[in-house]
Image (cartoon, rainbow, N blue to C red; front, side):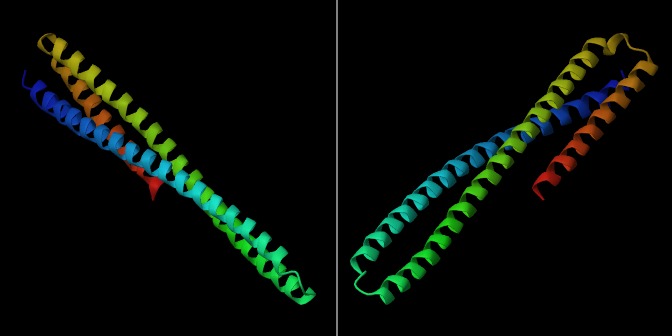
Length: 165
């Protein structure tokens, strides 16, 4: 019974940490999904505005075609604006794609955290049901497994946070 108290304390602490981490990840994921929707809306509005701007430029070009010089100047200005508008659209869409990749990485990380949570719950149940009849050697093995689970969790956090750096 002496060896099970630290193990139970460690398992309870791991459950608390994993539960809080999982909740934080869920909230972070919801925030990213909302931001992704806002980015898509902004990108759509910006591209629509750019199309309207290009349409207006075309109309103005037709109105100001009284001299060859004006037509040439207008085409040069329009070409520059088209390039700028296209660049803005491309940058916006690339940021939306990057945000989608981050959301996917967070979802995968949440799945790994859920697996670790399930392993911790299983280990806790196993230890609780077998603690009374376990030998000292078995208890030491359980303590080692618990420590290994903690190290795996910490390594997972370190590896997965490197994605966002």
